[in-house]
Image 1 (cartoon, rainbow over the protein chains, first blue to last red):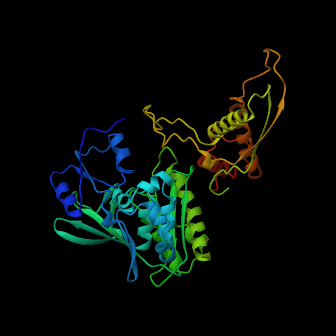
Image 2: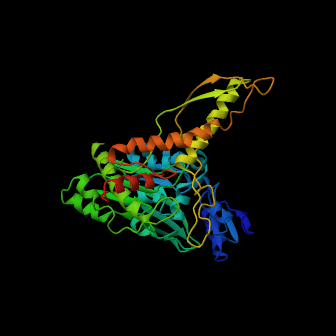
Image 3: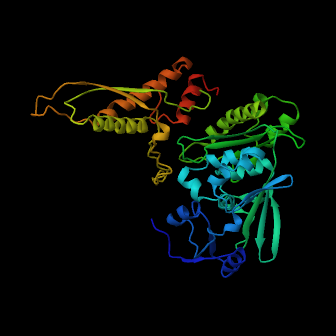
Length: 275
Length: 141
């Protein structure tokens, strides 16, 4: 199918983008387009105006910023995956970026676009929740910061007003912490049937987040509690399905996902502990 | 055996074909046929909901695998010229597709037969394999 009719405007700055978005209630940002355009072609999304920010060079960067790494929202997945800064300082992010879609998607899709789309089956939102990452959002009223745990409010529902722009994502440096991101999928380019991001114990405690087990990325609270109490991966992973509401769809039933997540959590924890 | 995920390690195909006019094309035809036979055994499935609506209506849900999911195929052939035409040629495009689904399904069943599984429906998705294992164990996962 083809999209419903829409207007198109390319802007040269974030402020121009905010202005364009504020003109109606029906405008959407266009970055890589790999989440939005398929929805428009199925007519599940029908924005009347597309505001193209894909060429804003000042939102494409990966740089150290104190105890964090700052990633510009328009950085392509390919560049996130190949960033030496991230590979050294926060490798779970660069690894997860390399798991997204296929090479064509990774060369066009952006980290900001994936995050703002807030699909619970996406890899990057889950990893950011496990990390406790921080999102920087700019709107007509100024700049605000949102923690990843609060940013994903529901199915395709990010904490973003219709005239706000996600400008930066800040992830903590994780040097020395074991990590693992396991994506269970049938074909190389498929979304995760179930995914698990695990970060081994540090001062803040182990963190485990799940892809596609609810309407948003979920921390596996039961598993984290068991681990904090000294349980080994096999025992802790038995609690992996607690609090989850996995979907039943063409790929798998909720029942199977609920069992699969336990196996994946155990494997992810073992891999994180071995790193 | 924990997730039901199938990974093809090797695929060997020996075809008795007619006179080979272009070996590269014959190999390519077998590759394509085998790939789609594997797809039928492990990936492709048409699903409807309770109201009769097609659920697998796009290429994201109707799974057609790519080279990334396939092992490298090992091919060989014997040549029996066809008696029905001057060149002795036969078709080769369907050979792979006919043999591959039963070969793959039988291999999947064989791989988990030690757990008591005797049959698995087609396509042998991870969930189907996982359920077959679970049912063979008497319901325990």
